[in-house]
Length: 335
Image 1 (cartoon, helix red, strand yellow):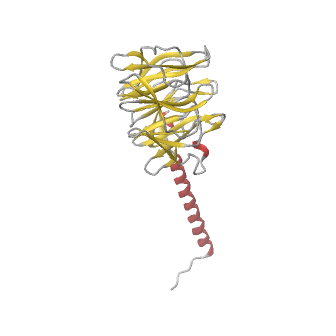
Image 2 (cartoon, one colour):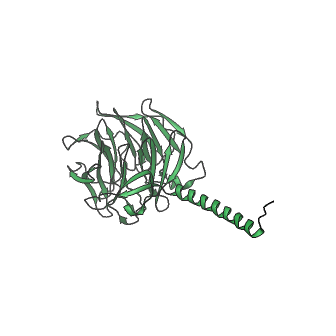
Image 3 (cartoon, one colour):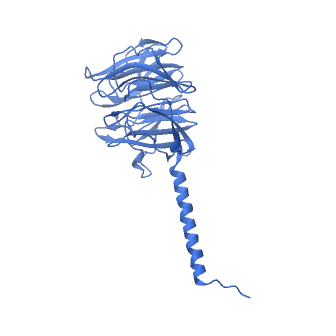
């Protein structure tokens, strides 16, 4: 005997299938939206501030200088990723400043340039920090013009500083050789002028993007090979019709061979986070920063772990500190 299904039952099965399909798609979307988790860590010990500079050596993050809306700073601190604790170190020996730059060469940290609003002065002085002796040594002044809002990065042998603002936006790059204590202009960057861009390093490749020039947010994306010292242009960060990556005053870091851009400013403070995979040359959005959106923050990264701290949202200056887990599911309960 042939079995029949009445119209009511058929309609019910059809609607159930549609609901199941929609629920499945919705779950996939939710999963995509919640990849990456931020976990609150030990709050910075001193005054909230923005526009500090930071570098990482091993499992220690180092932060110095900054501005809190009234005062400029020169104190210097370390953050221990393993013990989740802060320690005050010997003060930065230069004058107070904001928007300085830093880099690491062979496990020694370097800080220089910046802006002292008390004297309305762009700065060019530079200093080396020895982690073993907790001491500073002044080195040769930056080879280019005094400026702030630059980017900096290092290799095992050299440090590099470029772009920034000295009264006008810049695009020049300079290489520092610690063996000779001398700066030499490094040519080949074909990108736009900018200040307040970001870099992140994956293996021997340094990626540079974002920033602002004459009120225009920069969209170009470049990679610098530390071995050959050659710049190569990549696909613009807005090429996939995703303008959300564009910003200035952001932070960037590396975790397990992928680069990340977080927070920053695009008309106002933002908290969105994007991941770059150099193998596919593709950007993917990750869970946004889970506390205040912010600009002018700092980040620490040892290549396997990464932290974002401090910064400001409008006139609110911040002292919090968060660790990012890019492959975890977002969880509000750990903040």
